[in-house]
Image 1 (tube, rainbow, N blue to C red):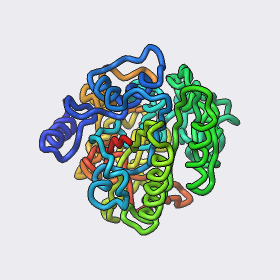
Image 2 (cartoon, one colour; image 1 turned 180 degrees about the horizontal axis):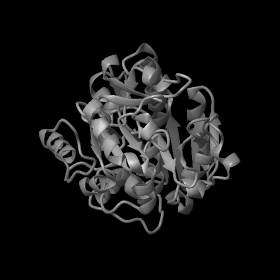
Image 3 (spheres, rainbow, N blue to C red; image 1 turned 120 degrees about the vertical axis):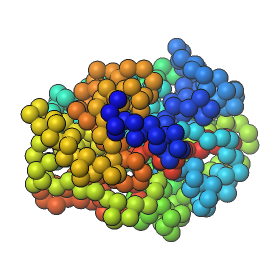
Image 4 (cartoon, rainbow, N blue to C red; image 1 turned 180 degrees about the vertical axis):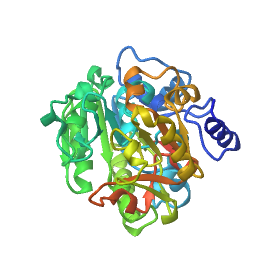
Length: 402
């Protein structure tokens, strides 16, 4: 193991960073499997934490899974204007690494770790395209061109199928209208129907009608991106972020009361958020000598960038990256990522290994790394709040049962 790998091990040992695998704390992957078992999906592997989660969820004719994007456990416990959610907090969980939406939602869809499902960050490198994609909007990263127009299929981008395709219940996915029915939405739900909403109150009405009109057992997935969007744009402690979360909290309180115990409601998140000062936002510009050593734009995420390096520059890139960014990031090979089990237990799938490229950077704290294109596009680096790392704020998420 390299010095960088040992630095990461030491950070885990000191508790400064949290490893995604824990003997005592369940993960979002465990929750995905427990929910699938409770919903009657066949052939789901019950790893050690799964039976306890399935027992806590219990048997119910109607299951509602609510995902509040960006709501970390730390924020819920200390600052969130969400008394209903705090009142029903069941236990802490860990999200997969990188702690970011595309990775977490794909783990929820597949019941698998990123080591197997191959989504390695908000941006994932697609070998057949020789370019990074933005998985959820299903576009090529550098020009936002729709992947369908480039001949890329969902099966190619997402190698593992969604377990929800095999759910015997009446399944509905409730999402903002701009998301409902998109390529990722159809993949995530296993082809089950989606309902789009505008104002937040419409989301709760969709859920209510789905249960009320159902002739049998149901599974409903309700997704709220508003808190995460406001946290990125204005900061996790902003009036806008707290207003978005308060509306969700109040709406869920009303919905649960309206159901009068007929629906088991499970609420969780995909990651937390941390404010990042300007001096901890690190940039690599397109004209930089280090950037010229790359075969494509960095992929991965802001605290977990992946680099595909030109073969002749492998050593030079590693040396240059560590010289400039080594105070805040370690640089690991895919073999080290696998040995450290950062993307989950077991070996990396071949597709995951290809997507990681030659090196993966890992933030040792809240520092973020961004690539500034030739036209000066640096929108992500201008955001005050970020995630995707291994800090407790990034990794700890709540499990709420009502």
